[in-house]
Image: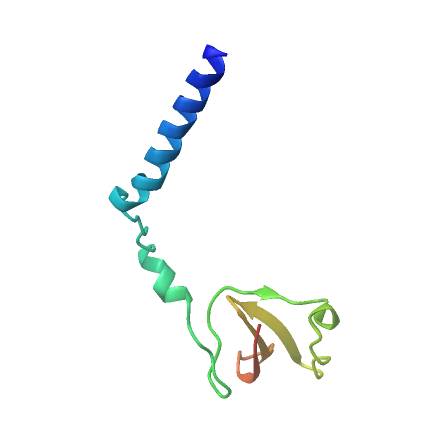
Length: 96
């Protein structure tokens, strides 16, 4: 019985500390890398895409329309861009 009381007392102490701890806890928000801001660009129709992106070969998986001849879908961050494969001109932008 005494062991049970000790365990309950210890649990109560831990719980009381757990409730009070957030009042003293300091929030930590890591700073993004310097190049984080460089790669997050909101692309628009008519711009020329320059940069690294993944070509989307399974565009139907993302419910994108088929790209016309000479164009391809690429994924840049949270956007899908329909670009001219030869010069990078953006024809359409879909935000995911």
